[in-house]
Length: 362
Image (cartoon, rainbow, N blue to C red; front, side, top):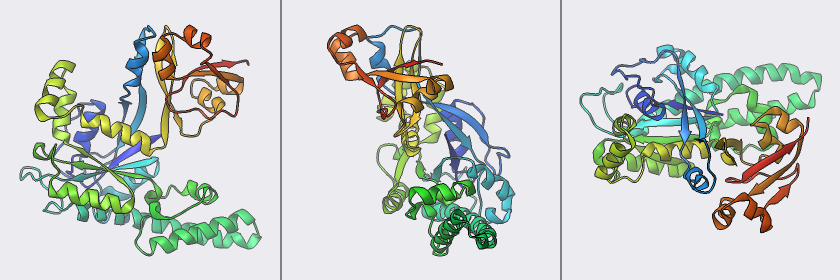
């Protein structure tokens, strides 16, 4: 599962990406500075790992990881190929969710591609380009489905109906993420990689003056997100890039000086993780304590499969206990003796924060 960071040129996308991944790649103050998408992985901060480690000694601790793609700045006309737009839009098609970075700061030294700071205009430019790309995809798919539906195939008929539903919504200049699609319709449409159907998290990139108190630009972005039923994470990409280069002691000192408890990027990583419908379960032993990433609703065998396919294929059962049980009883042995260790089968839905031990046979 991966998220793509999108936005107009010079809104702070690459600075944000570099801070998140500690890639250290300098950003440049001109459009189209990234020709191929940068791909990186970011750890998802989870204080539960440290809490587990207090009771289970281990050689290493491994957090969950989120894959990020830094996609080059999109401009008006991208859907028609402007600024290598078609190439960039194809990169968005491959991601599972969109992190839409919006410039919410004033700086005369950083040019804006449209000459002024207007977050809603910027959001609407990106939305329109993605909708225009989706319109072209849907129109082509409808034409093909109309030819094939004459054969009487029921699935093709259902797919055509779903595509026509999307077209009607797009014709109203509304992103598909606001369209109510059931599970079957989503399945039928999945192969098209429709851009505006992807979930979106807005990232309001601010200057240091707006770290604690929202400026006017942030307020309008939050109002826009609220209307869409979405979320906003406020980030000062410039500050976060400085924090990424410091050791823990200096980082904490700088955070304290600006009034923050943790880097805003920690909030962003967790928010993106949730946006993708992901959660973590843990394994814990002498070699490692590790957070494993699974979709919400994954069964025991599916969760086991992220460790190794043999675990899923030969799944017998999973032994489960909670972090609260570990903190109450201190050891797995004591948890067993207290009758708090649960044994679950193939239909068990793994819960966020479960500490699991899988038994399998292949």
